[in-house]
Length: 182
Image: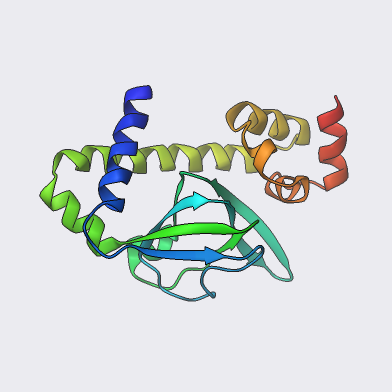
């Protein structure tokens, strides 16, 4: 596992030091990265801050993922399809993102084929995370959802507000508060 993290760190370093002009975006707290229905094939490296990925469900918002310093974030549906995304990425506090265009990734993977294995491992990890998220959603017990998330992502509880965690867990903030006390 540690070797995989080193390899991913190496890929990130390669992407950020690609020789391409480095674009950086600074988002204010609560600022949205892109508007809905925008195609965006960039990869974003969270240099500082934290973000949430969410969808709109009628008048409500539903948190899907979170990202913190040193994470990669992407509008995966738009990245893979080239079509507009139905997701939003929002800064939860002042956040600095480094932008890596998909073309840069493709060029670097062509120049460094050994990094393709790392990229595929990163995608596999994402798929596994999505499967865990699916289990969370299908688990009817709020306590079980809470404990699964706490075991899997303790950092989340240090970085993200209870309101957003409760939304992610599909429970009220009051229910989350009760669960945290026990």
